[in-house]
Length: 281
Image (cartoon, rainbow, N blue to C red; front, side, top):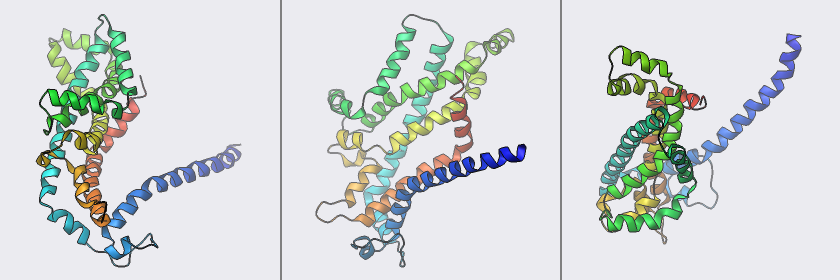
């Protein structure tokens, strides 16, 4: 009987694994093509008969990227923006999720609904109002014009996700901590914070990717002072309508992808546990 069940289950498992493999190939192919284009010589990139391989790999495209004086500055600016967004959004989201989960106050449900509504508004629809807001606040051509909007857009998702982790911590644990003499602040940072850390890591990944890959805000809010530009703007250095340097674009894109991959590797284990815990609410 068990053998029959195994024979019946194997075709479905084989089909599921094959489907997953095909999806992975489709998703990974653009990344492969990007890295391949970064190593291709100019003649192969501009060829009318593209091939999914190269017989003469070269580092010329990467040399042109690193010869750009602004590239290092853009890289540092991206690190500052993404790092600040991750830390600030995680801290605020943790405190806000704790407040809406542990405390009962007026308009609590309304506030949670507003978080959901905020996620439904397209970023493109708010770019022009945000431009005027940053202009009136004197934040145009500064990294603050990139940091503040990303924190605002990261918070609704982070709060909703962390709310499930905070709710999963039993209130009896909090009561026991108070009986042992722990203050509310000590319980918050020494007990609750480590327990919801996987959720913070998961939300931080999404915040980091959003801020690191942002092009819309960087193009809209950094107008004249290019020293405040971020890494996605470096692609425009190589993309010229009359004569685009596709090798430079692919090489710059490859370099820009490396920090994201490193960040994923560093937080991989906590990310998986965080995404698993997010569905327990």
